[in-house]
Structure formats: structure tokens, C-alpha cells
Image (cartoon, rainbow over all chains, first blue to last red; front, side, top):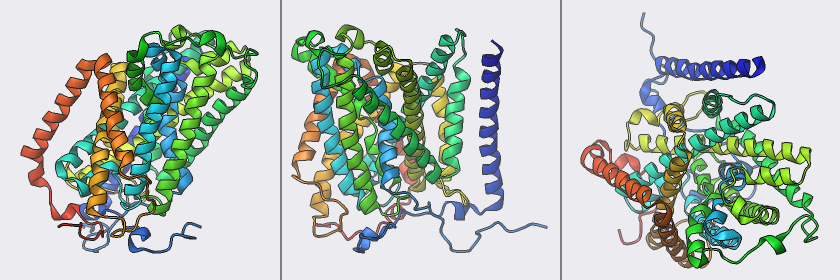
Amino acid sequence: MIFWDVLTYAAWGLSAIMLMWMVVDAFMVSSQYDEEFLMSSREGEDEVMHGVELDGENK
Amino acid sequence: MATEKIGVGSGQRISMLKVLNPFHIWALGVGIVLVGEFMGWNFTVGKGGAYASLIACWVIGLLYTCVAMIDSEVTSTVAAAGGQYTQAKHIIGPLMAFNVGLYLVMAYTMLCAADALVVGDLMKSGAAVMGYADLDTRPFVVLTVAFLAWLNYRGVFMTLTINLVITFLAFMSLVVLFIAVNPLSQGDVLQHQGLLTDLPYGWIGVVAALQFGMWYYLGIEGTCQAAEEVRSAGRSIPLGTMGGIMTLLVAATITWFVATGLMPWQYLGQAVTPMYDAASLLGNTNLQLMLFMATAFAAIASANGCINDASRAWFSLGRDRYMPVFFGAIHPRYRTPYRSIMFLVPIAISFAFTGLLDQVITFSILSGLLGYTFMSFNMVKFRKMWPLESIHRGYIHPFHPLPAITLFVLCCATYFATFLGYGASLLSIMAFYIVASLWFVFRRYQYVKRADQFTMPWPRPKGY
């Protein structure tokens, strides 16, 4: 059936496009941004740690 | 002319976006698990009959309730990606943390592979129904992983909002099926009186069923991985996790009740898609179509949550240099751990292409079980090192240390059950983690900057 053959090729094609998009984007980010900056995150802080009232925080 | 890269010497730090709320956490936890209600749980029936499945459903439900309570308390104080890995790092030490991180990555990556295989098989079944028998499942397996990885790459909010929608629809399909079988009129549609038998293999069958009982809930602990991306970890993680386990207890019980009232245990114990079969038995095409779609939604939601969680665990390992620090990068625009997401794509696809669904799932289950076992020790130590008055918690679980002890005992029982059915797999997985631990101790740990991995503003632990 032509429909299923087309769908199969479309699935391969879409997969390739999305995977390539990620690879290209990752290279562009690496070329534009400093590595130290990209890897500068630290374990998160949260208001609960500092005893801030939780009520009404997430509006 | 050379142009300077953005961020050089700025002193600024990048971080993941805090945009999630308790509903996203619910969607992450329940989304990973719910596919187990559509397939897999029924192998408990094959191990010990319908009643053994119900016992496994509730006993393992107790195990996961303990997991959810412990996770909720500890993670409400640890607003960091990595979940149980981060807990282990702060409370027990680097070697345990490395192992737990590896359990998480392996469990979620393999589960993602299994989910993608399910999507491929569903496509093949759909094509067969429409008259095309030999559909190649591989492009749809790859498309599932690629699309979900792309979605995860581009931001956590949209990723988990989609999970919320499709998980809710999948859950509602179980409720609709439950209503459709007219549950209050026994004998009308449901035939429990005729179909429920004594335990065909005795109590050893009940113990053996515990292993597959994990299918009902495997993955709810994944809610902790989002701790760095919720607006308030102290509020959202407990609400989402406890809401999730309550949803799953209801879904698991509904699933068992409907399926065992429609199919004999001999058939149910080896069915591939029991809930779809249940809908087919009712002779309603709309219900059939709904369950087909719901099974696909559940598998996609599970794979989506698994990519999210595996990448956060791998990212955390990278950020602390337990793995190459390259993986600890955050995307400056989408604020996601993009390198970790990309790295796990070929691994998930490779596992999926082996086609060994049984082995992949067993590895995933055992990795999860190893993680739960550590949590019981972790919780006792957490309360000793940071008593209730020493650190502010968003949630305090009741009856401590009873849940930790219960969790440990039930984990031991499940190890025994696994040994009965998959002894060789259990031993080979243990060997894998022992070798990985030796590599970490003798090769990798020298690269870890020990002070850099503890940046949480916690008070000094009691006795130190």
C-alpha cells in the first residue's frame, strides 16, 4: 500500500530532520557561547530553604 | 576578526527555568507509569492467578507509597535536578550517588526504549487492521524517540504540558472503560464469580507476582528529577508526587477489576495488550479505538517523561564531574540540559533496536529496585543528620521510620521474586553495577572537584 510506504519514508525523514536540527543547534550554541558559561549552573536554591512562606508563591 | 563568545568573563551563571507547577509534576510521574496499566501488569496474573495480581497490586502499591512519601520529604528540601542521585550525594556519599545516578539513567533510558518499541508495535497492529501486514516498525520507533527528544530539547514547560494532556486522556480512558462495564451489576458484563479462581500456584505464585507488580507504579519516583525546574520544590514535588501515587492506586485497582472480570487468568496472564482486549470483548468499536489511542498516548507520555528524567540524571552526573563535565551544559535559550538529551538519543534507539523488550524491561525494573532499596537507608540517615527542627521541609512524612523499614522489607521480597523468574538477569545486573563502581572509584573520582558538588545552602549536619 502506497500510504504506508509513504508514511514509513515520512517517519524516517522527520526523524532525520529533528535529529539534525538538534545537532546543528548544539554546534551553533557551542560556537556562540563560552563553555564556562554554559556549564556554570549550580544546584538550585528554593525559597523553602530560607523559610520563606509558601502560601501564595505560585500564582 | 575574532569575535568574543557570549558569557566570557561575565561572572553570570546559567540555570534551568523554574516554570513547572504541581500538575506538571503529576504528569511527569503518572505519565511515566501509566503505560504499565495498559500492558505488563497482567504478567502478575500469569505468575500467580488473578488474586495474586491483586495482592501484588496493593503490596507493591504500599512499596511505592513509601517511595513517594520519602521522596516527597527529602526532595522538598533539595531543589536540584538529579532526584535520588542528589539525595544520595548529600546524605550518603559519592559512591552511592554515582550508583544511584547510573540506576536512574539506565532505568529511564531502557524504559524509553521499551515505550518506543510499544509505539512501533501499535503502528504495526494498526496497519495490519487496515490491511497492511508487514509494516516496518523501526522508523516509528526512531520517530518517537527523535520527536520526544526534540520536544525535551526545546523546553520543559511545553514537554510536560503535552504530557499532562495525553496522560490525563489515557487515565480517563480507564475510567470510561470502568463505567462501560457497569461495575455495580455483577454478572451483567463482568463475570468475577466465574472467572476468579483460587491461587493456582499457591503463595509462592503471589511472591513471584511481586516482580511484575512493579509495572503498576514503576517510575512515579521520577517526579523528583524536576525539582530544579519547579517554581517551589517544597510545595510542588509533594503535591504532584502524592497526587500521582493516589491516581495510580486508583488506576491500578480499576485496571485489575475490569480485566479480571472479562478474561480468564490463563489468557490474561500472557496477553500483550490486555486493556485493548478488554475493550474488544465489549464489542464496541468506539471503545476499542479509544483504548488503542490511550495505549499509544500512555506509551508516548512514558517515553517523554523518561527522556526528561534520564537527561536530568545524566546532566547532574556531568555537572558534578561524575561523568564528563561536557554534559553539565544548559542551553542558553531553552534552558534545558541539551547535551544530555542528545547523548541519550542514540542509546535509547540502540536498546530499542535490539528488540529484546523483556530484557530491557527487566534491567529497567531492577535498576529502579536498587534505587528504592537505597532510599530506605537514605531516609533514616537524613532524619538523623538533619532532624526535623534543623531544616525546613515542604512535607514531613508520617510514622517515621515505619515507611523506611516497610520499603526495605518489600524491596527484599521483590528481589526474591525477581530471583525466582530472572535470576541470571539479576546477577548480571549486579555484576554490571559492581564493575561500574570499581571504575568510578579507581578511575573517575580523581576528576571530581569535591567541594564544588555541595553547593546547597543546608545547615551543617548533626554530629559533623
